[in-house]
Image (cartoon, rainbow, N blue to C red; front, side, top):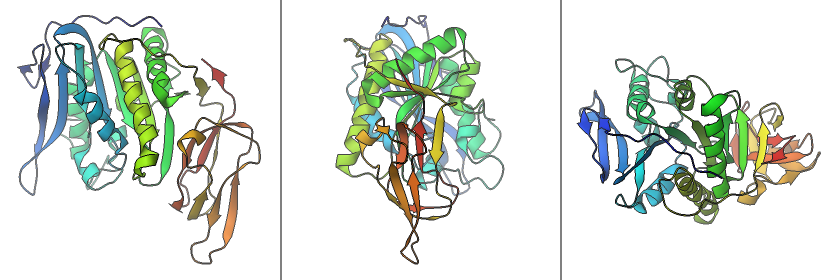
Length: 345
């Protein structure tokens, strides 16, 4: 696939200070003074290569209970030599520090918007959540030629392995979003999902500004080392393959045969009541694999009577694209999702 060319940047400013070519370092971005003392900041890592090239901005832990990208980000960052790098990488590994510390999906704000994912473009004088969003927009989205937001399964036990694109976006931004989704997925995610990204999300705001954007969904929380490794490797190899595709890293771009499906051809299998899920689909290779109509995906156990109360079976033939590990599941939570119509790209 032809690599994408992006405009050269003469200067890059961050909070009024210029980031010069050859820089690799950590820049804490101030947000607000806190009631308990001290100041909350956002952790920005920046690599500005000695050679010109595109600006790739990446964001993770928008939901504090989705920690999978942190380790992968660190591993990718360690291997980048600024002297050989082309362009600029802007990385915020923890977008919501307070939610992350609490291992929670939400911010601890006492009112209004507490889900950072839907708080964009933010307000620099608003709630803590809105201030995080505003600074992320200013530092990442306003500087980006390309944007990627990283998610993983959270404390509810979901596991995932795909890249989401907004299939409504046309023109240059849409075409380039699809191209970077393919480049990332070829690194190991294996699936591209056409879905409607919220206009109040970071990728939605970026797309509205004409910045090609994707949302990566890989991995889960508190997996064992053996279970975590394939997700992390898929994330790291996808990340590197994307940077090769953009011409930021030297090397040969990997191109894999991928599964594509869109939001109009998917079904979910969710429990009708809370209980303890006995999942039959907990392995990395289960995601992206074919399932048959009627195939058992999991069972719901009543934790009090210890009786199986419900079988969760696939309603159709298709490809499993998210699952979850065994454990407590509340009513209304998601169980499994199947793509009912797919194509190879």
